[in-house]
Amino acid sequence: MAASHIDDLAGVVLAAGRGSRMSPLTDRVPKPLLTVGNERLLDLALQRVRLLIGGPPVGDREDQVDRVDHVGGDLAVNAHYLAAKVALAAAAFEPSVHVSLERRTALGTAGALRHLRDWIDGRPVLLSNSDLWLAEPIDGFLDGWDGMRPRLLVQELNKPADFGRFRYLGVSTVPAATAAALGYSPSGLYRALWQEAYADGGLEFVEFTGRSFDCGTPAEFLAANLAAAHGESVIAPDALVHGTIDRCVVLEGALVAPEEHLVCAIRDRFGHTVTVDPAQVQVQVQVRPVARSSSSSALTKSSPSVPPAPEPAL
Image (cartoon, rainbow, N blue to C red; front, side):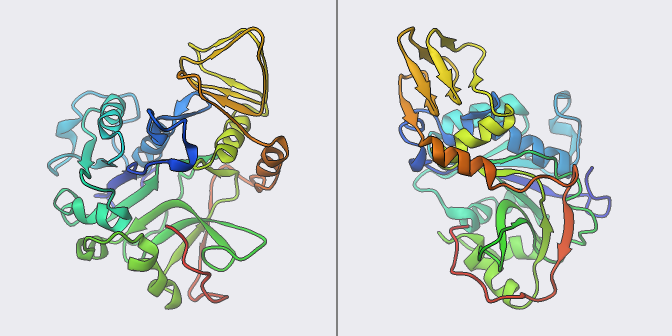
């Protein structure tokens, strides 16, 4: 449920990246259109943001353009690599989704928000990466947020991470005044906003206690799919598997021939096969914390307990 005191949020899903670590799977398909549990990562991110900022339930597509006051609606996606495919997928999810095209180059998170300044129109922003898969909902992420300080979804690790022992999971808020002041910069929000705020005790952290996966590598992508399917292989409805598979992902339109036996592999419709070391997949699945509840619990830190870690690529 959306926070009742912040009733005019702009939701932005970041989907402009190349996904080079997932090549060749992303050579013709943008990473946000890859699937976990047979659901597009982009759709999952848009649904996550839609549920948090409010509006009609997902699936209620009528009168989408007229239900908000701001021109262009309240939900946006940025796109650069294979942007036309991202734009079509966003429109299929919800016709009123605004697509911010970054034509020459991907602008980075700060630059993406600057590019969206007119569309944001003075509102606070809820951001979500498009390559994040979460095993549990985060319905309470905005509870109690007053719109004044950045709030980040994080997970505690047993080692130094992005913020002390907290690893950033890819969902955050940007206060309205901060979003309006951002300039064109290739940097992420860490350098543009969070680094100084963290040093001053000005960040709010909401800890996620479920399993999370950043689907930016084949190992994480495969592990997320196995987690979504409770350890079983995931086969797209239109994929054909005539051979045998073990802990695999067979994507939309893909074929596994009768003589093939795939283990810890990802197969796409173009015949590309990416294999992952089974031991690496086992580690990826096991290191994630087990959820203690169906929602996240808030952790607001007034000052950092340890010095900031080296700058992450956020």
